[in-house]
Length: 256
Image: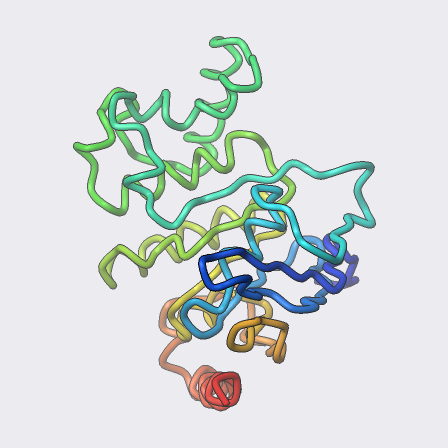
């Protein structure tokens, strides 16, 4: 990115939940600027509140305190969301086409326009999936690609992904990394992705934002300055190894 334009400003976001023992503080004064067109990854200890944070960014949950603003947008931008469990988020009684187009149906968009948008999306990214197939007949990678396409069908300015590859095997993940980066380069949208794999977070992201243990705040942000476009073999480079060493040191410190 030649000029960094703030797309999302997260200002002192806090969140707590009530349980039988009282209130549990999950997020505490999370502040971060997310740049337009960047690929930002979140990484942190299990259960620290990463999903809660991106749910707040997406408008699925409300923050307890703090504010999220979009300085470059007149109102709230269009946001696409890819859930962690693709099998549960897809509707097995609908075929691939209807699953992808479901957000458009909710918006009252005509069937003809739904089909046209889907046709454009599929052809633009050269996706080879049987649109009439039921989703339970798909492989894990195909099903997750359907989830990603459903997030993209609304023409989002921001795509938020909550550990989208955690339930897939390594080979499938590598294939989807390439597909996702290809989509991101073409669309030039802002992507926010939670990862539970440090290699994934470094490889995909322009920056890796590390969250502390609960109640989570932004502990540190690491620039993943590998050249773009990236290739899978970059994960075997000396530059990648040095970045991973820094990332592991940061992560160890988040748990202390």
